[in-house]
Length: 156
Length: 344
Image (cartoon, rainbow over all chains, first blue to last red; front, side, top):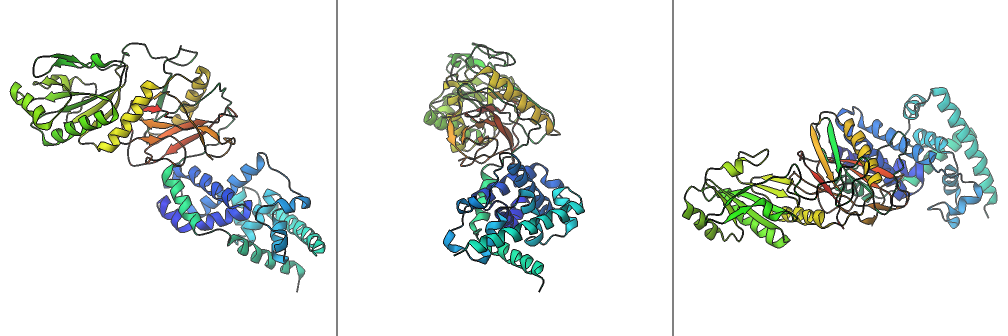
């Protein structure tokens, strides 16, 4: 499959995944663009472009967060992109909480609950062992649960 | 219901909803990003800091073929460590074509040293040559680049003159009845017409066989002029470092047998977003021109020309890092001698 066909077919889906990782549309598009560019030279050798590029997107995200990553706390919620305080419903609140996760936690959450990957598949994407995936997922869920509760209590 | 499951279900729905924020146009933007500049953001093993005085960058140009050698030449400046500086007069690789016009005037490419020169080999007997001669003449005058013809194998002196008149050629041609002059062009094409772009030091920096597209030719000429007219702005250390980078990266490409020459002209600062670690947004805009059929740019979006195969490095003007190395894909393969220039 030509890369252009691939992008036509899968481009928006990739940007969606990237958006869930970054929470910012422009950053999401940049991420996918970066990932695709890394795949270009070896495109002909890539057997499973969907999983390959997805993995490239996730790794580009983790790389970008590794350098100059900023830790956001609950106090920073109002400054997160795309979230208006007035919009706070349960779902928005949860989305805000997702943005508080660490990059790896966020990646496993997106891969599991949006991409519907199982532990084994996530392990491949992140180049870690399955128990690590499970541990990260449960830590992410615990954080989400705590933050979510906290946030909902603060709502008017 | 297990609250665990509720959170997880809620999570799936939340993510699905959030993902709807991505508009359909995202795909189109990705596609245009791909087409405009298929740039590979390389993760270099260790960041290489390049000192920048003012402007920076260098580029290697290669094909989709193995072992590229990259030479970085700095223009119009004293040589510094690791960087070859071109001689003031004709270079060792200068092309020299001499003879007489059909009406007996001596003429030579060396008459035109110091400015870019377009050489077109044509013959009145060859229909595409006639088209090309007229085309090159017109492109040359529009771009303000001198044109010299080689009238190949028009054996009759008067017929040669007549052809020039018929075609309305306003440039002189070396009358090459035997074809020897045309054959003496390094790496001579055996087919006519062919067209050469020679830089101010007599080096062939562009070569086309057959009939070229006039507009494309003009673009290349405009770039060629900016090579020769560009003031020296680049620091030798920067070039050396960029050259090393270029060499490292080109060696990674397998199957190349290309000698690419990067001629440094001047850079220009553009607002751009080419990704980390070029984070300041101020980077040099690089264009590539050379022995291939189109003019290409070296690495940034919003480029008016289609990319062909090539490799480029850009440098961040604020951080001073040569931060991006791009590999562009395309149908065409640049030949040895491709030239890299920056335009303002």
